[in-house]
Image (cartoon, rainbow, N blue to C red; front, side, top):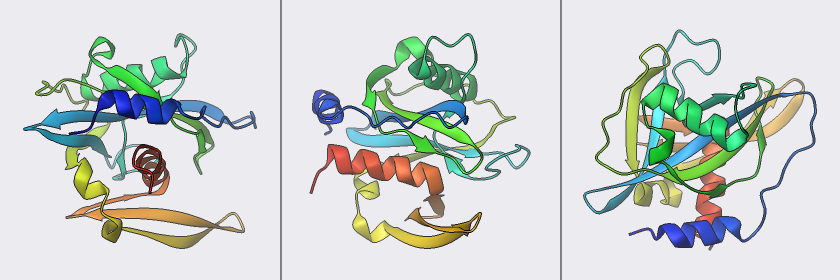
Length: 187
């Protein structure tokens, strides 16, 4: 079983690496952890096909910062509540990962938190097509991860992919997941 205090310590060992403000739109996501039947799990969502960005992709709950948000952690919690119905008061924040840049022009602040399970989700069906709960132990298997070189705006970037059963987690979500796994489970 994953010790949440150990996660907090390992994430806090080094401060998150902020990125310089490049005029990108601020956003935040939550990497949500929970225990189901004694097994540590990670919550993902599959976005609907009707959204403007990342249609049908697997992601963490999150979205753009709003002027009323008290900070980026508040953005991640607000978005998680809007998308999944997980109340901010029910999430115990464990730490923050390094900022990331989305190809859609977002400066993303990723946070890690845990919530009690079972939990009665209230899924926003306009944004979320599927709730995906995957065992953390399976996500740690190096055999399910690979990278590909992709070209975007004239430059080549490595893009990570996790394949678990019928689920393919890639791009920014895979980058955040990989960073979490490397920090919490160092080689």
